[in-house]
Image (cartoon, rainbow, N blue to C red; front, side, top):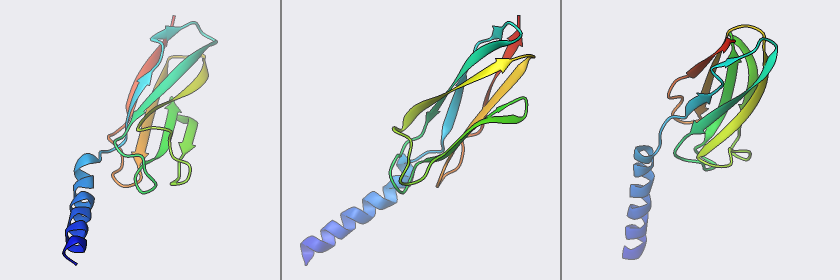
Length: 122
């Protein structure tokens, strides 16, 4: 009985410590500084988030270009991102100066906020 109480106490402490290890999903946008008009740009979104379990994971990543959604990934407990740090790539034809904004969200803690990059026309 004493062993069961010790084990239960240890599990409770681990469960209570999980929020200390967790964080909000954060993104970094990697894009060319400039391209020629009509050229396709490769945009890479890097996501980081401590925790990647069936209970705690990045559940959404959205990428916008000049205010319009150009890509979205929705994740579930059964279809989580492959790692705590992962990347997604988007290709976009650039016709004008373009601002890329990306944001990822944790299912429990939310987002660390959006990140952005501007692509100018050469």
